[in-house]
Length: 509
Image (cartoon, rainbow, N blue to C red; front, side, top):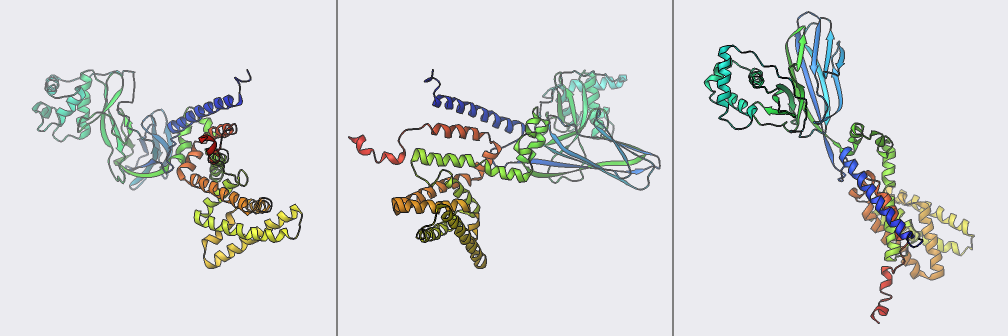
């Protein structure tokens, strides 16, 4: 039983569980919170401005505007409306904003702004199994004959019945029967309504849809008119010019059905114009908004991503520590490099990130060299251990102070980088190197310093990578995997890589 539940097997099982958990957590964050493996991943954020203008008639004013309904197609970040002197109410059931006011003079201007994100290509994805009731229009005998002729002529075109009708109404030259049915000066809306009537006559439910195409820099544009028809399972949207089915990519529907996009009572010459502006926001900053719409929004509230930015930036550096520790463990237990302490290389690597690689190496070399010289002088005074180490710490502080002053005066960034090195660790390295120098000779002391620097440099190139820092912060569950890897390495009792050379003659024999 003891053999079955060995430490290595238990740790291996824990490692497997941590890998499964970290993988699922990463999948969830990518799927529902919009996280990305790339640190520079960004989300498109679209700002749609609707400018409403009209001339009052001298009566009380009531304005009703249809607004986008957040669903599968996109998500709303925020909404805002500027209507000075108007009382504003929101009808959530019909997704409309209603504004009312007493009689006014002069041209009126009202502005509605909505910011959306994660707009998706939802062609054929808006399901609605509730088949709507179709009310057949009433035609006179002449119109009845015309409609029958149009339906018969449309059979010569490709596609379903909706596509056939849209195509015949856009065909050039128009079929004589279609021309006779349409007014001389027909608008796009009137043409769409005729198609809807014919579809209703055939038992197919259809409706108008108005929306805006998300095109960067689009200004003062009218709403685009499209047609939606129910195929028995879902609403399919069609382009009234090309008959192509499917919601176009980057298209936001503002209004569906028989109600109008804009109603103005107490005003004439009403117009609505749309402007579109695109911006880019880091995906990780949008995670909170996405999390609120997910099924497990509470998990985000208790995550590090809900903290203020100052705390997040601090934790971002802490999250990289386990990976640096893993490198140190690999270097000591697998490679066999003897370093000065377990975490000294990690702290040196963190300092190199702050100072810059070359500047940090030069500063570290100068501080250690001067510190060893001063430590040699202090050893001749036969001081006790604590006062001696304290004196070394003070000398290290003074060295950093004068290097910083010198760097500022001579405009040397190398010297001013000295302040980023951990004072206590630097003093401890000097003390440790001096003791090894006295007990084991200068060669062993130099080896430990060099090996510590090699480990620190290897750690530096890993933790200074922007991709690595992003992944350890965004998917911090990976630290659980690192934890059990480190613990498993603690059970390793085989040869280290540096020992293989020493035992090569035995292997040959």
